[in-house]
Image 1 (cartoon, rainbow, N blue to C red):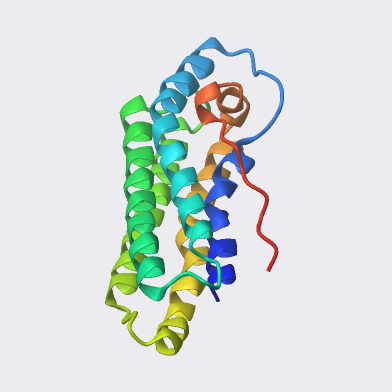
Image 2 (tube, one colour):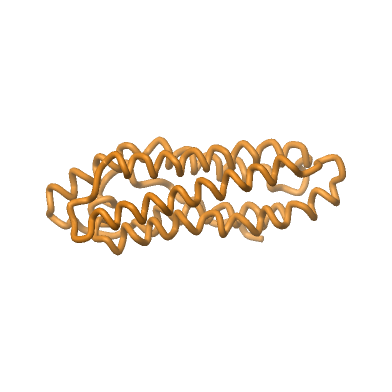
Length: 187
């Protein structure tokens, strides 16, 4: 079960994979906008990466239920806060200077906020679990693990909106939007 939780958590890493591309669109305004967004995103992308690493770390079979609960709860909160910050940074940067920029910005920010809310809900579910009974904890953990894919959906949609909105190449060129994506764990 913990392996499923760790594998599902890696969905968060999809954010940067979706934004990947190659080349430069040559538009200085788009590049400047992307730099502003990506520079603001970098600390939060790192927080998401670190939280996912912690979830994977405690997903081993020999980790106590209490440790899994405490670590996953903190990680879900960290991911929720990071997605909220990604949305705020995107909103503060203004609309990207591309066709339908305002719609792209709003849809992407809404997606990140949706994931932030979903991770906060997962944290609440994790906090409500009783870690004293290992078997019951494992059973009750299943719906939380299943909720991870859904929680990441908003961020995936946000990334897809940015990609289709014509800013992915400019964002990919920015160091702040690049992060190391760990290989998925084998279940």
